[in-house]
Length: 249
Image 1 (spheres, helix red, strand yellow):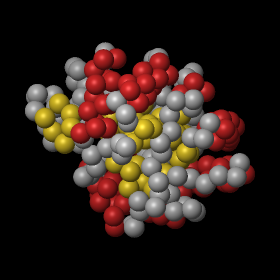
Image 2 (cartoon, one colour):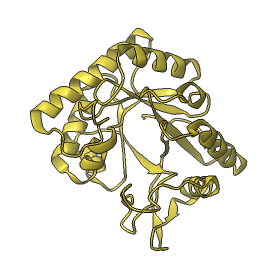
Image 3 (cartoon, one colour):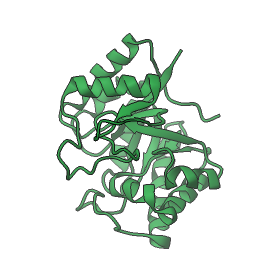
Image 4 (cartoon, one colour):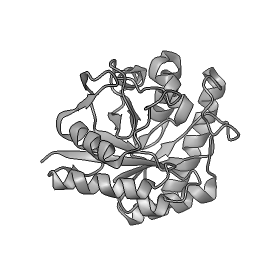
């Protein structure tokens, strides 16, 4: 049976978190850099665990004003120290709830920057490798994030996006360009099924490309995110695709 993980980025102040946690199989929870605080981390993690949803840390550039979406915000040791603090804070809260981290997934501009920046990817991988419980790292396949995970001996979870358009080289069409985000539900559900079943997607130029996908991202701050997630899960399951978090071993 084909299986796929549905992950959502949560704890960022969006209204659909509780509803999404009834649908997804793993959650990346903001841990104080771009959004979130100890209270939101604890609340979100607790509800996730009640629903059997695997939890992970979602650290970002420490830029609350810009919501972690300003590229090149921080690097080197200052970034390492910030990410370490963010992940440690969330790890401690998870431990108080009797849980460990399944994964670490960088947020926003940090994710996008690290896809192409070896130094940034190494910082993220180093922080992940130093976290207790041997969590995995989520990122796009065949990018610096995957290569950094390999160098640091981490389990890597290849992520694909159901609501984003892809370039022919497998990267995402920048949000600044028309058509970068799919708004039609039928397009989103079709892309989700194709990614899960075949690992293929139609790029912006019409070319069919391969995109490795172990986990599919649902953006928690998208308007109507819970309805989209429910539709995606229902369509996947109707095609015989099981929904579950990837195993660490």
